[in-house]
Image 1 (spheres, each protein chain N blue to C red):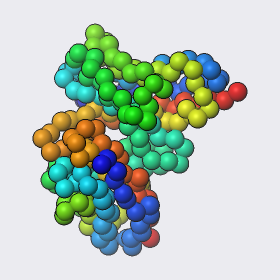
Image 2: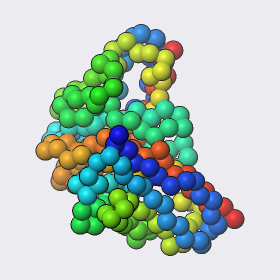
Image 3: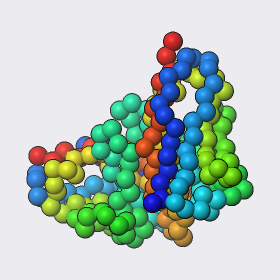
Image 4: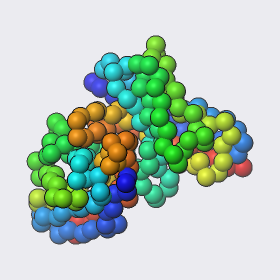
Amino acid sequence: SSELTQDPAVSVALRQTVRITCQGDSLGTFYASWYQQKAGQAPVLLIYGRNNRPSGIPDRFSGSTSGNTASLTITGAQAEDEADYYCYSRDSSGNMGAFGGGTKLTVL
Amino acid sequence: EVQLVQSGAEVKKPGESLRISCKGYGYSFTNYWIVWVRQMPEKGLEWMGIVYPGDSNIRYSPSFQGRVTISADKSISTAYLQWGSLKASDSAMYFCARIVLGGRYWYFDVWGRGTLVTVSS
């Protein structure tokens, strides 16, 4: 299966911690990657593999997986973290897979 | 600096053809797959197809097979996405991105800024 399910919207108070989840059968085999997309901009890679951050991504972003659920955690959310967040993974057969539907994060 | 530079916004009429481009800089273009991603207004990301410029190996998402054509010209480090006959429903932002292949993970590490395609009579 290639379907990845995300909550459509999540909110977090400024400087608090929030977890954004991504569920799918393929996540028991393949890691998710996570992307941040701010309004009017291209997506940006945040997390890949077990829990790897590209250069320049703040360490308040972290990733984890448990069973068929991948999670992106923001520890100490900032106002600039308000954005849409997408997960992506290969499908259960190891093919291209799909993106999750996206989660809109509001920082209160 | 590694970057993907996409062609500019396009305004077309239904039935017209179109080709948009994505040019790679700062890395060996032939060694990485490129993915094309559609984002319709206020919607999520959908991968359309991938191309390996090294040998022009191409794979399409079932959702887009037969509706678009993807190609690459390795001599000028450029990937293309084209339509033979546009529809209003093709109006969207189109991104290209570089794919990195790991064992248990694939990810898109470099993205173009997007090409906005508007199809309207």
